[in-house]
Image 1 (tube, protein in one colour):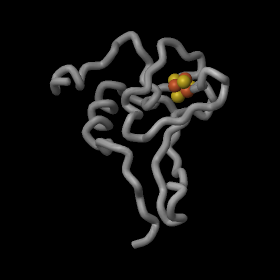
Image 2: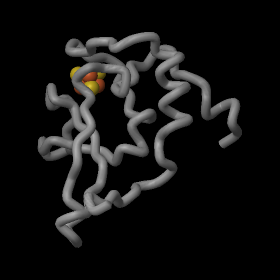
Image 3: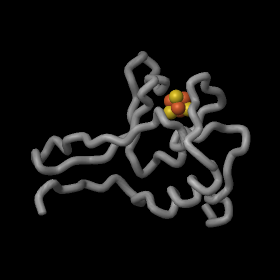
Image 4: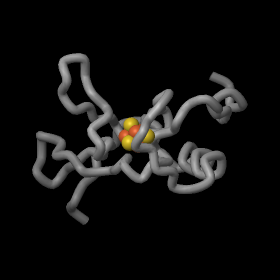
Length: 101
Ligand code: SF4
């Protein structure tokens, strides 16, 4: 994907990252109790798997989370500016973080 295309916004979509109900949380890595991963979820539970379970996503993918319509969407600010900054600051892959210093 070229840089210009990666920075485009899908004008007809809602970007969940810019919604107050899209939240970041820590999830245990399952390997070491001091290690964790970052995940995002919709606190309105709008993200669902086919069988109805709540769906969560890896943090580094959050800028790609879009929905066509959402009655619960609560915009947090200027979308274009926010997504631009977010795309520049997100990790490029699923990172493991450590509580130990
Ligand atoms: S409430 Fe709707 S717009 Fe907000 S995070 Fe959930 S699915 Fe996305």
